[in-house]
Length: 453
Image 1 (tube, helix red, strand yellow):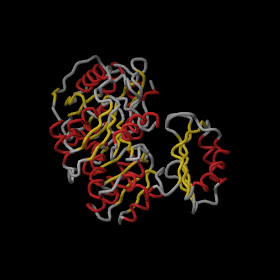
Image 2: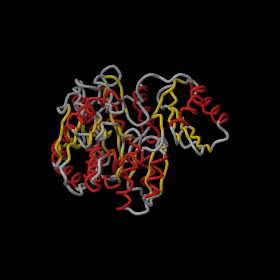
Image 3: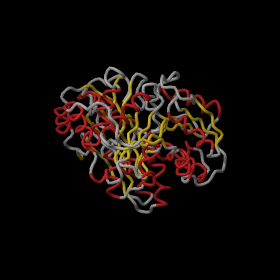
Image 4: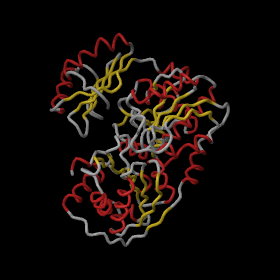
């Protein structure tokens, strides 16, 4: 069973690896990882689920386990993961669990866990402990004593989301690909933004009949790019399966790196929160740091992973943070991810500036980068030590794996939490310099893996 407990969530193939019995045990033992401060909020747990067929019985088993442990369940039904986060904060609940496998294929399912105020639970802050309890202590037969209620959260969520709109003119044409995932629920919110929407693959279908709900893979953006070109859209939005991530396509149908979205939004955020820190992950372009500085903010680099990003944001009072994977975090949203708030903030910028997105991004696209490339490496610590020796003349830090910076190029190599992989990101001031230095990394790391992130 150990394979289903990941760094930031729980995930596996249904029913072989993850099933009703496992979710019941997770629900029962969940109380054991909650703090006194969490439970002081009343012991109510928000439970919600995505559109996969298996999510219905899994969510029911989870609720039974929670209630057998004496916790109350507030069932908000079908919801995006950001709606689960919102419900925890809005209702003042002790915690929340979203039954989802996010962007994974249809045969998978899982759970994302949060404490009070939508504070994430990671392997280091509870998932590891939960794994031990589930493996070593059988959960008793179902005998629910905790309360159960169904709650409709959408009206409050709508009001919350639409507060971020700062102007509805001009009317913009926007292509939106939800990949038959949970962002289907956002349709009435998108329609309230005064956009002419070109909708792609709306309608909940956990078999993902059109394409995988993972916008990090370029092949999953082709339909969106085609729609942007054919309809002359100002913007394209691609959501993942549980709608906590969004990837943008500009008016030229070019994919926009999420680090450049962080850079683009830093200015408007810092107008509202002058001088504050903005958090970005260590894979981000130099342009991100420079945009934050130019807007009078404090750039703060952080490890990859929402639990690290959110913890740092809370600690230093950051209003906004972004990750290369398409996660964007908002202090005004319980310091939680919101793909939809991010989309609204981009629309705000387009309307305020009056320029095409490609024009606004042109100055930010001034460096040459590789994106993230995976390499199969069995002894990851030994490889990182070797890289530190080979590149000892650069500026080295170990915030996440190893980062080495020179005046005209940099790279980061970090280990996967779950696979024998090292992930490389490189950037240089010119394409020529990138082409010159990239072979030095490949000589050490070997041939790149084929496929996704």
